[in-house]
Image (cartoon, rainbow, N blue to C red; front, side):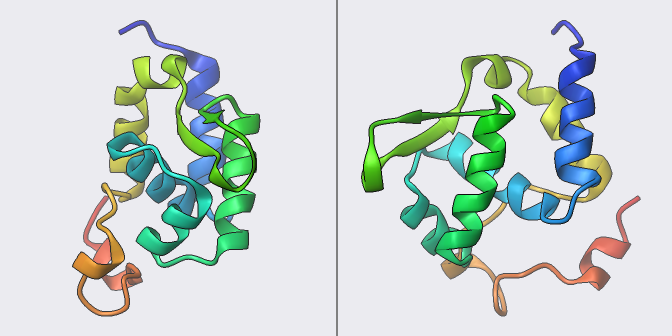
Length: 122
């Protein structure tokens, strides 16, 4: 894999340097497993529709996600460029302690990570 320094900077900014980075990572992990629309993502991840919509706009604007279709049923998926460099995303997530998300129905408790769960990761 050829290193893309611009992508690395973008990912660190979007995931580690901005509020909401963990939810953006959860959205990306989910869309890598299965392209979905905003409503499906909100339900799966236990997030508000408007929050997912906001994060999707940022990720599409950063060329990490692409849209297929129009309107309410628009489905999102990682761009080919981002998918080609996905290992970099995985490495950054590992450093930040963001693992692949599990659908809300499969998680213990309320589906959100706690600081104590993440504190053991360096």
